[in-house]
Length: 371
Image (cartoon, rainbow, N blue to C red; front, side, top):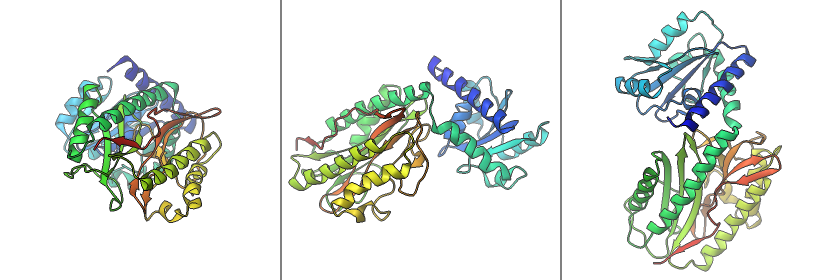
């Protein structure tokens, strides 16, 4: 573990201890799996690759980790030498036994999104909301060290998009583009990157994992790529054209570019996630494209970033969560355009005392790649 990763882990543990003391809790039970491990990563810096993992973190004391897989148990024992790791056929059963043996009983469970049903229905099930909210508060507002990790991930995202642009040319398959980006990230010590993309024209309604379709002249090629540094993700969304952009594509880009700028301008302390979403959507409504900011065509207008690629808050008009300095997120007015197809455009940012700082530095352009 690098010194910076160790410092992050120690800082997070101190914040958890302080939050438990404030809440009058003696221990926190945190569950995770290969799909959703951000809460577990915050608590113990543990990221499961298979099976289930359940941690018991006692305030100011020991931490234990229960896993289903012997291989995972051996890996975590190496990576987390100060944590008592136990591998068994049922991590849930072992965690239940350990909870029953605790002298103290003021325990909270988390998170709602990844907690096993059996634990949720047990004697501490009523504490799920409390435990999840406790960790959510800690994870939403980043410390300077955490922001530095997101900043590094954003710089890597910029570099990754440069590789993507250079790899995009007529005749190349979508999977070949992603392979080059993945090879680049891994060469830079980044084994985690969430990436989806799409290529084509008006028929394209969204992005997807890479397929075998080959790029052709006139295609819009969209991607969002999300590398991870020291456990923290940053994301960039951009669109390029194979060949010269058409007048319709340029008109569409101008709308997305203005919407992104409006969303970033609205991102400041005291504003809500709904305020940012409304600022983006207003640009589309002004252009008679309000239909395309509904759930029929798009999901969110951005989202939080941190230890998970798609964290709270979701940027939607009905989300009232207020921004505070230290929150990190991506603003992206990604949606379908009826003349040209699906379009993406977004930047990572951190909320500051006076507004926000955009972390990704790639120019906001509709890039053209020689056909």
